[in-house]
Image 1 (cartoon, rainbow, N blue to C red):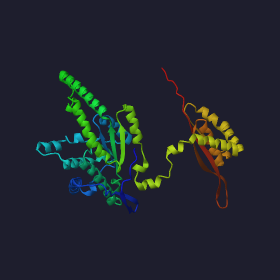
Image 2 (image 1 turned 135 degrees about the vertical axis):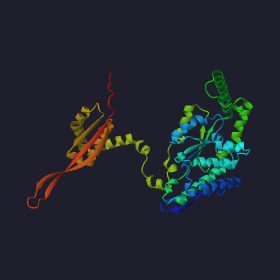
Image 3 (image 1 turned 120 degrees about the horizontal axis):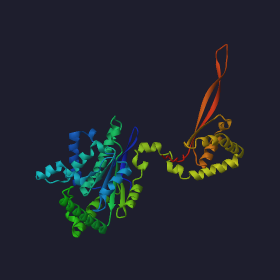
Image 4 (image 1 turned 90 degrees about the horizontal axis):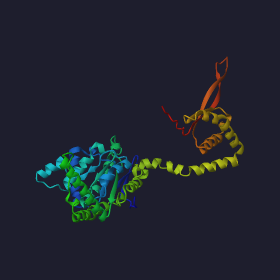
Length: 412
C-alpha cells in the first residue's frame, strides 16, 4: 500500500473512547452532495436511520479493460476473508429495476445509480465486507463514496452507546486499482474478442452452450484504445483522487497471474491498526504479534542455552540428566504416536529455571513441550480430638511432549 495522507478529521469522545468523524474542508462537493443527500433522505424516510447498516469493509475495485478484475476478484476476496459475491456494477445496472426504468424511456442517471448501489449494500449478506467492481467512475460517484463514509461514521457516533451499536462498526474503505498499460490492455481486449468469436461459432454449430456477449471494442483496435483511454482519463483519475483519504492499492496486473496474486497477498495482509476499532486496538496493541515473537526465536533459544551453561551449570546438567533418565525412554515408547506425557514429582522442577531449561533443551532437539503444574493434597494425619486432617501438598509436574510422528506404510 502506498503512503497516504491522514484523513482530515475531528473526534468526539464517548464513554468508551474516540469515535472518528471525517471532516474534509478541501473536498469541493456540489452536485454530488445534492445527489447523495437526495438518495440518503429517501433511504432514511423509507427504512429508518437505525436500519442503514452498511458493510464494515468495502473494497472499491477498478481496473483498466483487460486488467483481469473478474479473474482476480475471487483471490482478493479470499485474501480479505470476504465470503459474499462481489457487487458488479455492470450487472447491477442490468437488473430488472434498471431495465424497467430504461423500458419506460427514462435515463439511468447518478441518482438512480447511487440509490441502486446503496440499497444493494444494505443487504445482510454483505455486512462483514464486499468488493464493489466498477464504482466510482466519475467525480459525482467519488463524492458519493466520501459522503457514504462520512454518513457511516455519523451513524456509528449516534448509535455507539446503544443496544444496536455493534451493528455500526468502524468502516474500512479500500481503493484498489488493477493496472495495465495501453498495449497490454488492447492486446487482451482483442484476444478476448478472438476467444468470444470462436466460442460463439461453436455454440451456433453444435447448438450447445450459451452465447457470450460480443463487444465492439473487442474486435477493433481503435475502439479498444478508446476504451482504455476513457478508463485512464475518467475512472483511474476518479479512483486516484481518493488516494489520500482511504487505503489505496495499485496492483500491477500485466505480470503473470502468480505474481499478481503475490502482490495482492502482500497488499491485503491483515493489519490490526487499520482494521480494528481504535478503542479495541488501544487495549490490545501492546501484546506482541506472533511474527515479532518468533522471528528471533531460534537465536534467543541459543542465547538462553548458553546462558544456562555459563550461569547455572550444575542445575543445567541435572536438568539434562532428568531428561535423559526420566523422559527419553517415555518418548521412545511413544515414538509412533508423536506424543508423550510425562508426570514427575522430581523436586528439581520446583525450581522454575529448571523447567525453563527442560523446555528449551527439548525445543533445541526438535520437540514441542507444554508444561502444567498441578498440586495435590495428600492426607498426612488426623487430630483425634478435633477431627482436623493435616494434608501434605505435593507438586506434580506434567509435561506434554509432541513431535513429528513417522509415516507407517500400510499395504495389503
